[in-house]
Amino acid sequence: MSAKPTRQSRRPRKIQATAQFYDLRLYVAGQTARSLAAMANLVKLCDEHLEGRYRIEVIDLLEHPQLARGDQIVALPTLVRKLPKPIRKLVGDLSNTERALVGLDLRPRAPGKT
Amino acid sequence: MAPSVPKSPTGIQGLDEITGGGLPRGRPTLICGGPGCGKTILSMEFLINGARQFGEPGVFLSFEETVEDLTQNFASLGFDLRPLSARKKVSLDYVRVMPSEIQETGEYDLDGLFIRLGHAIDSIGAKRVVLDTIETLFSGLSDTRLLRAELRRLFDWLKTKGVTAIVTGERGDGRMTRHGLEEYITDCVILLDHRVVDQNATRRLRVVKFRGSTHGANEAPFFIDETGISVLPIASLGLQHRVPPGRVSTGVPDLDGMLGGKGYHRGSSILVSGSAGTGKTSLGGYFADAACRRGESALYFAFEESAAQIVRNLRSIGLELEPSLRKRLLQIHAARPTTSGLEGHLSAMHRLIEEQRPRVVIVDPISNLISVGTSVEVKAMLARLIDFMKVRQMTALFTSLTIDEGHPEGTDVGISSFMDTWLVLRNIEMNGERTRTLSVLKSRGMPHSNQVREFVLTSRGLKLLEVVRHQGRVLVGSEREAQGGGAVAARRAARRESRR
Image (tube, rainbow over the protein chains, first blue to last red):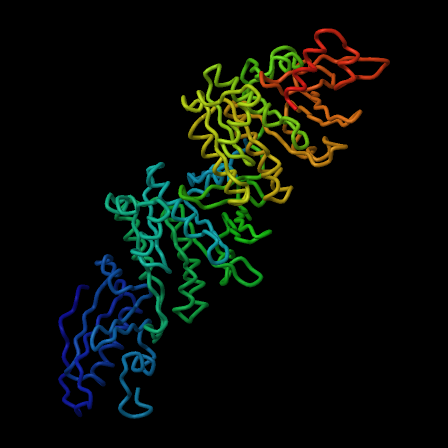
């Protein structure tokens, strides 16, 4: 599994007040259940909250171990928000959407929405 | 020796002795202690020595300092890490875990760290690994249960990688490390300590446990100087050293006469004790001079007087040290004992002795060293210094200032057992005059005189006068001259007059 191409959302929704572009990088190690869960959770989250303004790059450290150093990766999976600045790191499989949204500085649209 | 687990030498002086050869090979060792106790330096030296001396490349994973900081700090200690990094002998990496940057969003593990470390190990073929200080992870990640499980997995994984690892940990309340790493690292645990005793900062090292191996269990002093870490095991080097044949002159023919006519045994230790002004330095100076006359090198440690002062004073009793100093046969190192801790002094002495490899060493006086340490450790360290010289077959003369004129032997009992020959100098006050005397309290392995001889310092050297008995008493000073009578006595009287 190498870097995936940009994935765009096709559902046009309300334009956010702060329409920043999100450059995201997901680090995983192999196609483990946890890696796959993290990817699925991330895509879902982006589709729902960042339509049309995100890019996801998935890096498998089993294939590119030398890349762990640059982004200071210790735990896996780790999602690195490269843009907007400042850099944020989300550790874990993103199953806790609330925490993931807080980590990305995204407020959920409606309370209780998962 | 009993079979023991295989070991990786640290190359750190003294530490390999205490551990009987180094750290357990292929296993993690925990090194713990408070801030500033020397964990990082010890770990780095283990790595550098591995790369330089033992052909074992190493990975240093720092959780606290950036690679630039590490490189700079060790450069100031005299270790240049850059060429080792460039030649892929050492790999440095900084693992930054900032709590402010990290949000936990679900399940995770530390595979990222494993992959990073594994990649570093594989890319240089590392045999040694240092993780300094891995407990920093606990400040960045909140799931302590998971971290503990992962660290246990990490240490097991390091074993399967076959690397000899050092894991450092900060001292915690009531236990060795804050997060109880000692529960997972059970092969070898070393505790470092940095404390201040009597205004002197002292560092201590103790091997708390070493599975499958005997080890020194005592605290050993260590110090950090421009050559890195040196540990001084309190335990002695053992008594297996070879004894060199032959005898060496004391530099005083009369004294040689008292010692079976031949002087000290080569490679022995000599203690010259006495109160102030009894001629200890003079005996030391003559002994050094005799060595230089034989063409042997001598090293003189002066803890009371400057080199120039010693040369001047000895000149007044007919000893000219300048030529030997010029030929560099004789080296005088003068230092105030209080300028550095006892450990520092002993380390400096070790180093100078190692560098110059003298045949004869004089320590004048050893009692001044005692003044900077507590006596138990002083004895232990002196024992070590003495053994150190014996193993190198050097003949060493120590002077010792005794305070108690009545029982000069009493104050030196602690160190005298290490000594092969013990000369006692005394000032006797009798009939309104002071007279110096010299006696041989003991001298192992040789017939020696049991007499108390009068000891005179003249402008033409040191003399021991024959005993004159009169009515069952030994006569000294003017009394003996009166009794001895004749030309000899007159000559002595004249000489005596001249030195007053």
